[in-house]
Length: 361
Image (tube, rainbow, N blue to C red):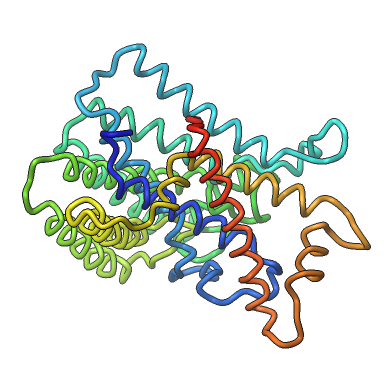
């Protein structure tokens, strides 16, 4: 615990709390715009949450695997953790309250947030340990440029490819052909197969920031800020060719989200580690049990949506009974419900911390 970077733990915890906030509104029909994903191109605050987590996964890889060699025990450890994350994600997608507690096979979604975290962690860890800073830049470039050329310039069945939500979109086409009915939507999945490639770049960009954090460079905050601004500028420039798009995890989205992540982490690092200002302690405790908190929140929300009560779900009953009032807008009630869920899991994280329970997945 003594050698951990407080700013990294706080950033991770804040990201998890934001994930819970945007995933558990009181009603999906009444949500303020910043807490919804962009319809397709563009981005909102909500669209930044997942890439922020993959970015901090990359930072953590740098802090945890510095000077490690790609030997068998290290490989087994990385593989084991990745498989655990993938299994938890598949369990969330397949779980049902009806015996044998599994959905019908054709309706199970295979991709998901935890599955992508597991795959990205596995590949980014191996690439980081195996390579160097120069090779990391090279791999990031290959992933982003290669994805851009594939998505934008290789014809699909004799038809020009598109970045729109259509059958001649390479990411959507591959997901539909390989995954079939096992997707989030009938025609695409935001955590699909091809778009996982640029998601690896999100984590690798995090490893570069992690290297900077653990370096002895005096001006590391200034460099993090400069790195962030540079990625934002490059991302917006690239968006003129390949729009910022979370569902496709476009190269411009990778760079813009990593740019914002660098700016936020630089600010937290400056305040908490250079100025020694005690700030965000409650979020740090969430960050120390990040996956456990996220999985618990996701699993509980799923159960609440499945339990029937008075003609609706338990989730809907609690929301309508305790949070809906004629005196406030329904969107505010929905947000209040989500905030209440966040408070519950923040308190849960404090209890785990107090009991010195730190569960590594």
